[in-house]
Image (cartoon, rainbow, N blue to C red; front, top):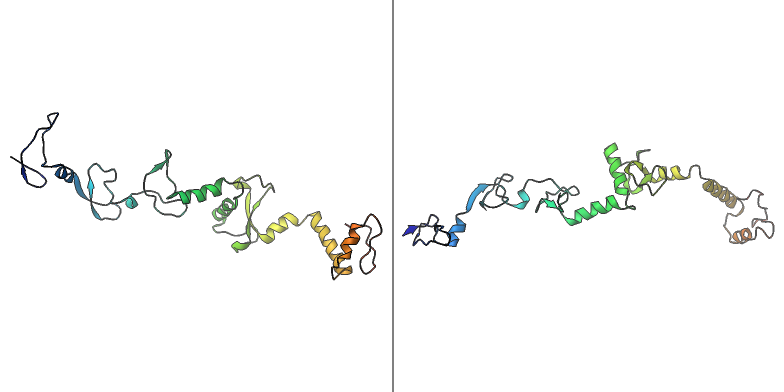
Length: 218
């Protein structure tokens, strides 16, 4: 009779195929003996682990020393790689948010804001210093909305953005002239003025108060 090294029970040794000697009284004792007690390197907790385990130095996936998620900062758990590359995000949700923001031709706002935070330390208008996020916009420096190179982005407030696009605009100057004339000759904004304008080529134009239109009418 032999004694099982795990449970100290006496058993009759059998010889299995291949000449391997039976050491334990049962499969239960055989697998139980492969577990050892260790201290987790991350949290210091005592735990049992199999000598064949790939994470035998950590008590759980959450304690495995890995880099944090690039979006939310949560420690990445589970497998270390995805599609033969190191994982950068803790979940598909975080990966989708970042990837959609960085690769889309429309959602360039995130990249523009990130550039400003990197340069200025916080999100502000790069011209006047306005920090109200409700007014901030990502501006294309070369005025080409198809050029989404990060170096072509600048964060501006709504006021600075409007000045950038409209300060030398002939259309805006023309709008101001029309507004001044309307305010002077048609303060009630009566509809006949628009009917008169539509007949510009058919007869001389006049304002509702009888004043003729200037020759250089926009």
